[in-house]
Image (cartoon, rainbow, N blue to C red; front, side, top):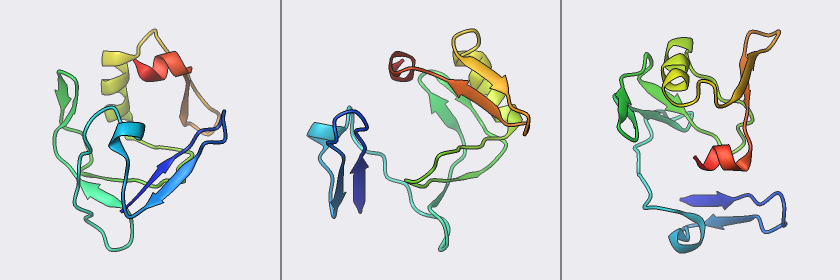
Length: 111
């Protein structure tokens, strides 16, 4: 178990090996998921919920990485989430490489 806190503005970043500090770095309890691949940080899931919104995604597993600078999601799943929560609220556009990029500020991220 390890946890990371990245603070780009104040140089207070921290990595904790063997534990975590919920009081300092989390707004709620942690959710634990069983890793489903011996090669990647991959977890299986079925229904996804965001508040009261629930849907079954077109994929049944995801990969996570602390170094991820790009997250990808199938178009159908992306538009289901985007249309429900963010349509007209975020600056999103399709890049020349066909990936969609959405810009948000700290306030939008917290919402």
